[in-house]
Length: 281
Image (cartoon, rainbow, N blue to C red; front, side, top):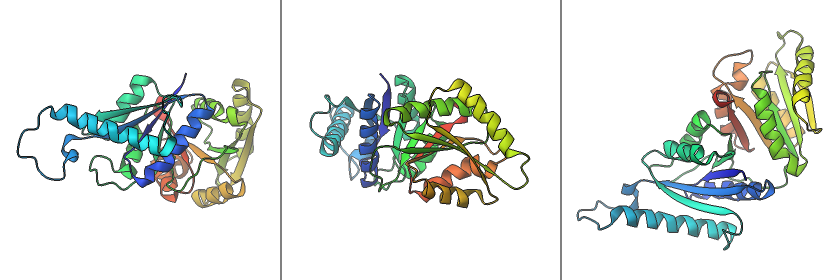
């Protein structure tokens, strides 16, 4: 059974991500592991002058109870029946702790809030999400604060015709199948690109030879204004998830696919953003 991890900081901004992760794990028949990373100094509002007996045990138990209470409040009382587990983790680095857990359980997907505001110094969600997108060995799904989970009907995957797109699309198919969702593989071609339609057809033939899923559509969008026209397209097709393969600043369309696009889409903040790290594909 697959495992989806959701990392939370208990903020209002993370609630939508928790509910989204739960709905998605139910649809995919996956386990949901909700983790909260804490650091000992954040347990107290003031400096502690006297030694605290069993300090580590108390800190862990407090955070564990907070996490269970948080999940129960937003998901319901019977977490075990819903295949929801919780784990509090002590670590000064949220990114390192979450990635270590992703590796430990071989997570299929990591779900986070897109942005967050928290008094806890160790979990500033906006920055942490960026770091997880950059470093996580599994896909990272960043959920906007005002997102509400509904049936996923349309997923858009932006492609630059790379061979590693295949593995990303195979993962998208695993997400799309239970919903019978449409996957739109979209290439945005600037005016100077030579024969984008030929490249698109070759790419389509390559993917269809490897992927057994009928609901995949391939499209080319001529544009010299990549980000702006991509946003217009997303609105036109009423997309539910936008997916990208995170690349370094290389290739024909680095303005679309390098790290800055992920940051732009994150700042755009209106759609769930699914990011695949090219390093692990």
